[in-house]
Image 1 (tube, rainbow, N blue to C red):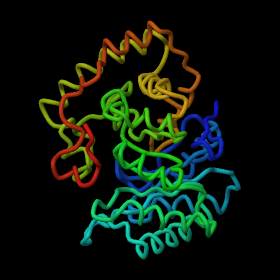
Image 2 (image 1 turned 90 degrees about the horizontal axis):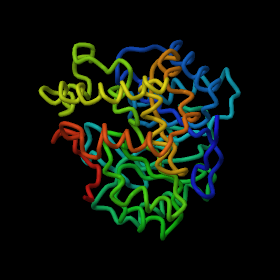
Image 3 (image 1 turned 120 degrees about the vertical axis):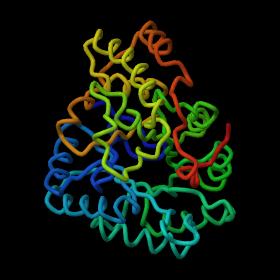
Image 4 (image 1 turned 60 degrees about the vertical axis):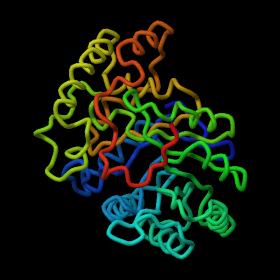
Length: 327
């Protein structure tokens, strides 16, 4: 696999990363053996950057990774996140005490004494950004983390944080159906030498040869309450995606690989982190870095799925908990 730089001062990693949220059962049941088999396929594909979080199964995803690392000596670069405390008040907590505790717990679950990247999962608006970056600098100086990242923040927050201490990466939802980061965030990351890490680059399973069916979404799962998966939006989205499927098939590519390649084509500082529970699904997009678009290909994609084409907002009102809005 081709490689990309995880920020100006970060390590080289596979051009495609891997999101480990699915290992915690967010998108259907799974088990440790299946997750470990998927991770074997991830490594074999040349994917070397893993993304997880404290909140994914309340430590379950990190625990599964930790058990995997005990038996496989692969040199994965690891990112994890903290800052969300569901069921607590405040729910978003960037206090030094909480972040120290969360980091130590994550390191213990992962079986590591150092991780490459530590994200603030959501920014606590009432806390000065200077105080937050001071806490993260302390972790860097102590050798606990290689660098810090920010998740779902505005360009203004990135610029303020980066001026205090260089940021390694910014993570936000970005795909052919969610393009708001083009309103300054992707550009500022490029200018500052910060990696931009798109999550859900395959549109939560929709930009595939077989888009997720509503009846197959487990009860209570995130997508049940998401506007884009509610009727009539869901059916409208399916009809629009069918045109993109036809385009991909006409080129001999899978729909998911085409969608992922489009994300990577938006800049060499983008490192998307698609997610899956199985090695079988991974095979559908693992070679997306090999796709080379012509100018006509990109123009055709823009005509089929123009910016703003998706039906429904990316979050429902209750789901808009803490992402910073800047458009």
